Amino acid sequence: MNDLGIGIIGGGYMGKAHAVAFSCVSALFDTALKPRLEMVCASSATSAERYRVAYGFARATSDWRVMVDDPKIDAIIIASPQETHREIAVAALAAGKHVMCEKPLGGSLDDSRAMLAAAEASGGIHMVGFNYIRTPASQYAYALIQSGRLGDITYFRGEHTEDFYADPDAPATWRTTGMANGTMGDLAPHMINGARRLMGPIKAVNAVVETVHHQRGGVPVTNDDQAQIMVKFESGVTGHIHVSRIATGRKMGYAYEVHGTKGAIRFDGEDQNALHLYLREGPEAEQGFRKILAGPAHPDYLPFCQGPGHGTGYQDQITIEAAHFLAAISENTPQWPTFAEGMEVNRVVAAALDSSAKGVWVDVADY
Image (cartoon, rainbow, N blue to C red):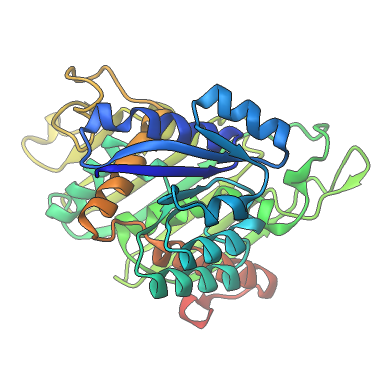
């Protein structure tokens, strides 16, 4: 049989995105395995049933343990708060389920290490939901760097900036409580992952992590608003990462620049179907960045549309992720990013937080 029973834990923003992705992924990518929406889990029986009806699942539960123990569930998608990731993933892997876990992998570095150990012991397929680096344009950026067309890489600059907390009068919520829900736990993992994908492992960091608005509506804020992270990659290249949830005017500022001796690239998530490429070739008067529109010649674009420039969107990133997960299971071959990548990202986060507290450069390998 080529069907695969899917269970999703969490029916909100990300739970819905994954449900939609697994509903349509086989029609788009003609996957060898055909996912079946078997069960959704939410915090209450009422909400679980609401999600079941809305998304088309066969069954619903308010207890994730029921899903883990169910023989009709072959793979579990964890889209619940990060402090729940470790317990669910360890149990699911021990039960022989394949697991895709939303980022960050765990609520802490210790959680990530435990989850990676459980994944490696299980022999099953495991992935982390770093979706932004999967756009066709960013996959092409990775291929350009690997091809050597940019020459020797000399510098990297990345950011993940949004403005959902730019208003200092915005009220306190769960997002303002606990470091796992701050900018270093929420936005930073995406760009750290992107930097590692494009540039390789990060060797050392020097960070300044800040809480700008210390109270919201009279309630203390217990996590960070923004951070600046200078990085040294193992390759010897240096760079900078900026993350912020108070970057006024930025809505989806997942952006990066990579400079090389022969060329450079620029990408901005607010224009996710374009990659700006500069090649130091030809007459100087004709040199300059050119805008390349994503199209069928770029990775994972053609399943969505045959026309270049028509574009993909956020939901398509999640569908590409689902296709990669299904391919990994079908071929019994790990697909990047596995739990190992999730753990390494959390290691960089831990190093950056410690660097900020101490005011010094720190080696990531020490964490």
